Length: 219
Picture 1 (cartoon, one colour):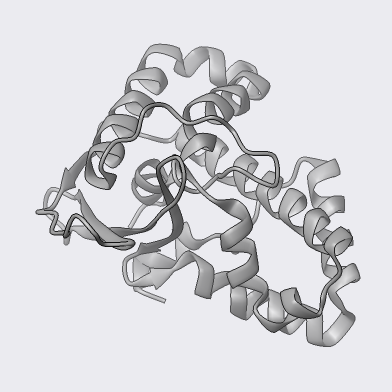
Picture 2 (cartoon, one colour; picture 1 turned 180 degrees about the vertical axis):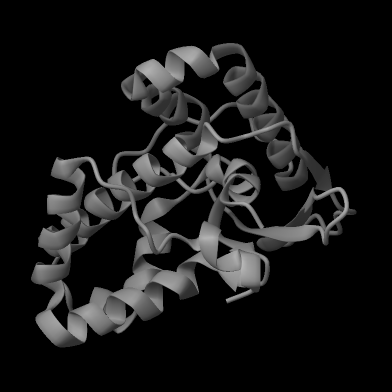
């Protein structure tokens, strides 16, 4: 499946609040958040594609404004690093969260420009009022092809619901990076991984191992 199909649907959840919290709008249910914010992103891309293509800083600013309040990037980073997070000091944790977030912002924001009016369908949502974790299921409709499932894992926080993982075509974003980064840490150490992310960010690189391309074949 084309990278753009997945990226559009998961982009608004794939960049989150880091240590400094962003004030979120009034609380909505998780399925309402997916619908509202996805529609807003689509609207902005359609209206400003030429501007965003000329000036990626404006694209990144749009992502910061429309996306950051809804995703807990520190929780996701903790899950990505696993035992290496527990072994890290707070300064290493903060550096990793910042560099990992910046790399994904640029990777997915850039791919978002490839959106071509694909339909994103929200599937029936089931949850109990006292649930602390829920799953919102969507799919990207591909005429003449197999629809691609995209699922959002939310947890209840104060002041509202936050996303801590996204699964595209059965592949978890968290698990995807757990595997990739664990190999690098075992080989070179956590500081070396953080340094490589920082270098990629300074160079303006995007991540060729992002979850989008892998989903076309499932793995």
